[in-house]
Length: 312
Image (cartoon, rainbow, N blue to C red; front, side):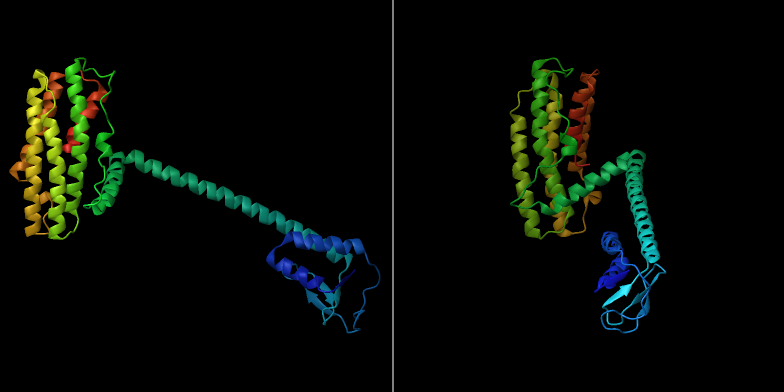
């Protein structure tokens, strides 16, 4: 079978690139022509002697014109070439299938590894995630941007109908208290984040004043809440904890301005900080004493908000 023009070069290139469809199409055209006869020794166009050329990666040979006018290919070579292309395509498909399976297996193993880490060290994973998000916001806090924060504390809210606190005024008090603490937690986390990051003295002072103004507003609204007689002790503790928190961050700021390396760990002995922490813990102890059968959702909401408002 005589292959005219540059079809041999096209087949050669298609084989080298693994383009099965091109080879199949060319072979189909060759078989249609079905030219038969003795194998010539010269090119029918230029009469030059044919040269034996190898097809890449196949181990087959054709007699080709040195001037690229065409090549002679026996029917045996054509059929062998077709089988090679078919087998090559099957092998390639098998490899693609294996690769797809390996990719899926890798995804499954990766998910399994992540799941194992989460279930083995759930607290560490949660803490790491919270710290990562917190660090992101710490650097973004500015006079123009005061982000709402503390979702891990403010997620829990007191259920209106399902709460075990069945006295209306008492339930209303705790609803208003945790709403105020939502804002108070945001203010605390923002100034705490500011003092963790490197700022100029002027920036520290300006951002503390924003915190102080916002937290004084929380304090003023807290003081206006109607407090049932049963909860007056808890409320007094909340007022004192808020006042001492504002005072503590002023002391923390002054220490930071004197020594930029000052951090919260070095401030743990401060009396204002200790008072804030003590009053919040005492308030929670009183809640548990007054409501020994407190339902889970109400208990979680109050405890989470008190923890989020606490500096330590």
